[in-house]
Image (cartoon, rainbow, N blue to C red; front, top):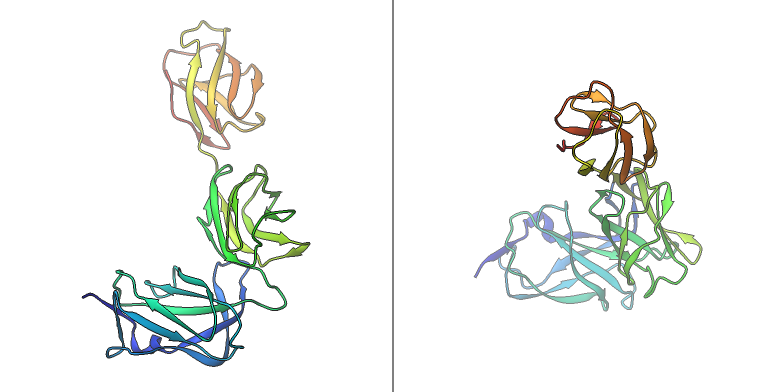
Amino acid sequence: MKRFIFLFALVWLVLTSHSTFSQNQNVIKDKILSGNIKFKNLDKGELCTSNIYTIEWEGIPANDTVRIEYSTNGGVDWILITNSATGLKYDWSVPETPCLNCTARIITKDVDNPFQIISVNPNKGLVGDEITISGIGFGSSQGTSIVSFSGANATQYISWSDTQIKVKVPTGAVTGTVFITVNGKKSNEVAFAIEANPIILTSINPNSAKIGDAVTLTGNGFGSNRGSNYVSFNGTNATEYTNWSDTQIVCKVPNGAPSGQVTVTVDGSSSNGVM
């Protein structure tokens, strides 16, 4: 039998209530109530995997529904035990994940703000990436509720439940925060960083041309307009462009261009080279 060890100092844990979040960090700031969390039937301060232990708490009404989570890395990441514990106690079957730096927490809904984001995973990504928002009180279906990123509202939703939303990062989103609006009320904000789309050149058509011929470059991450971006033919930059979009560029082979690789440079970063 493996042992799921809770350091003695963490056996008695503060009860998290009215959970709020820093706008710059995805971290719960605890407000301590008058009571604690405790585990019954401990074996010298340890929990043994596959055994069932009763988690008890106090300081809130017995009929309040709470969320219980545990961490195997000292509170860096949190794993859900249950979203619907009531009665000031819950029987937990300890999973087969032994650790030496474990802790647990109980989260109650803030009566002034009954829906909250607890985590966004991953907390950074590209436009079009799918992310998972976990929390409480989102509602069983989306309805008119929305997820907002700094710079844009999401338009593509994969799933929506009371405790989890899967959504794609929208075009126009910038590094900042993510929040949810439900029934006209705004949730807490959680930090989210937008990564630059990789510049990928997949093909050139035709792949053999004379000086002055138009060629079409296909790929992604080129940007919606050219600006100061450019195409380079083995070190010689093109000067004549007839089309530029995020996935396609049409330009003419410049004077002096030697045979070799063609690349696209966007905001100072260059793509892979294609012959």
